[in-house]
Length: 404
Image (cartoon, one colour):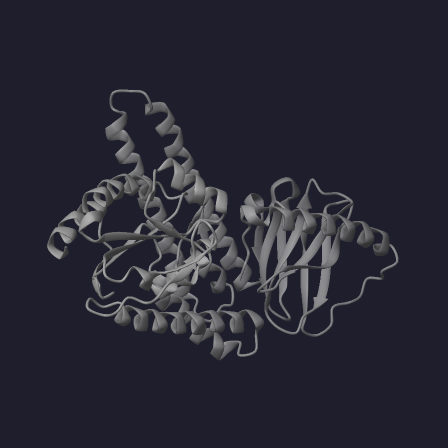
């Protein structure tokens, strides 16, 4: 469920903004021809008051599991009041939007009458909602998130004040610890939301809650929350698209975890290292198995990884020291571009074997060798069997002394 924007989506966001503006223009022209209808049985009804919003229009949008879809417009009268009804067949997520950065998120069920008040100048921070347990739960999530962000802002003020003072090193650690505590409190809050509201669709948003740039719950670390919420919601909303999407994510994660365990068993010490064949800097395929007869370090690294670049210094020293005794390095770059990769090779004076498919962390070697962070290292013997995994450049020297 993609409710967040990243830098690589800037172009897409601009395209969506253009579509948003066109939609609003068409809707404003169309509104004067539309007649107000009485709510039908099971209709969603929205009503309330917007301050500083006389005679304006808001966009009503649906949040699907994959996109944000414009649905209709809501007219605010000269007194700031509005009433809007919409027939919906199932529970879902919706937004009332003034602009792409100023909106209210709702979790709506058929037949609910949701009452909303807000200042249109800053709807996320000023709105109040009633008449919908799911929408109120989202309001609570936002309130807690805003509380945490306010506390984090205060820590940043203190950080700037202490910078450059004699006590800064000590205070910096205290402030970092305080920030971690805030993040832990935010995580505990969303966990409690899920535990206490397993049958509310709005709890899905708690699963994907971010605090600043940090996703609070991660499938790898908190999978039990994804799984138990999926199970409980499947009983209540068996055909709901958001619940189906969550169920699929849970299924996919289980399948990936099963594959990870299989890969992990295959990577046990004494097993033959899985084959890798990737292009070298000249574009020629270079197989890991072509280095048989040597003790080989498989070094997963990237130009954008500072610890990797630091490790390259030590690797260079060890390569020079042990190469004549049958030591080789098979460097696998996880860079995004050829220029990044080649520039790092030159700057770090890398003289050992290098390969890359330039697919970043999406390279098949990531799953094949079962890692999620770099640098990642694997040492194999002259027959291609695994000696050790995931050790530091400093530990490598001892391993080489023992195996060459």
